[in-house]
Length: 520
Image 1 (cartoon, rainbow, N blue to C red):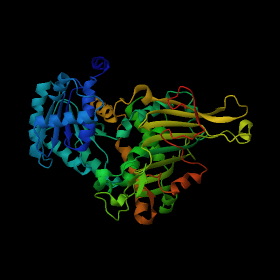
Image 2: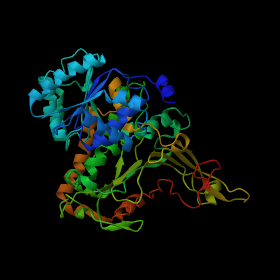
Image 3: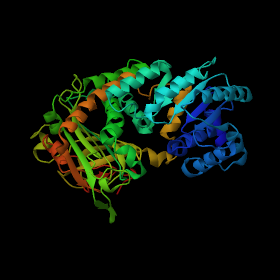
Image 4: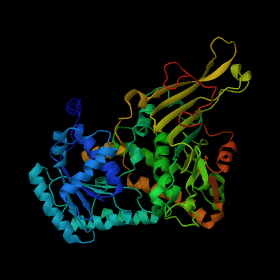
């Protein structure tokens, strides 16, 4: 089976992959498994090398053992073929590096030349900085001054979020990177853009003729985007307390999904055309002009003590490395508007938070109902039609329509049809990091964020952050294990709407069409 997969795969151009932060959690959980999956599927040929870089000392053998352990725990493929594993592992080397010492980068350059010769690598360089954003600039300067950019092949810089702390810090960081790399060489990762169903949004919209004519304010009542987590801050308390839901989730993941839903059809299937359309959406977001507007349209919450499935849960202020008087938000819900001809007047409701009842990422598109007192609407309480795009953990598309109840006259009930992608292909779909590393190695920037996207997103959320600094009393508390502060429901009720159930937790009176995975 592995050989069949390899035969159908297109390998990325050979390169040296530099993993800064190679002993960190991101490398262990995501990057090593992604590289092994790419190799297993033939998307990495034999002309590559991976250099693990971190401060702590490790031998090559120790590093490879760490990679092996990582794959066994987190990869969708297992390293059970000894010959395949040995071939893969020989491409991995480790170097202890003080990123503040340019001499270490010169040593890294010398090591690179040996790897180029050993694996016949054509001088291509991919630098993956799994580091704190304040280090991006200085590392980039040392890459240049250490001679690592003096090669005949391409060079690309992959950097993780957060890209800055606000618009001002992001702009300074971008100015530093621009002194070393061109914009087209900078790949800013938002791993949500690598998820299968997020990428499927544009296919659902633009490859189906019956959606596009309805995809506007004449037919859509509202759009709901939910990104909920059941976990708390865990071991990330120190980082999260300086970030919060606004910066950690809303500025990137939530606004990126909104842009994918609201964007106009790009003129061509070209990365820059698609990114141009996303930027237009972010520019069209109605800005909050005052603290009063922020308070009217945004709910800021923090979880307190509670329980989930009978298990007691601590409050945020009781978590490790969190200030016991912290006002950092762990929950955000917002009503935002995209002021253009397609979407004028349609509310987009966003909510994200920690310690919520269900882990899920979903987009619900609620269509306007049929006219009141006309035909069936005059005699029945008709439910609106829904299109639900399930991103995580289950992947798929769910459509709810109204239909006659079989065997009964004049009784209408909601019925659901679902394509469960996870049920069809299993849970072995490629991870987001696999897709994004593969795209970066091929120079495909479609699902990476461009600088003007980042700037527009920061400009929007900075107004919210400023209003919260002025009014610390805007923080509301919600019990861990609940769906957030009570005012979150009021946010939609003011407009005559409500939050729809997520993750398949639909109303009891919905009938699943025979053959659907959730059919009752």
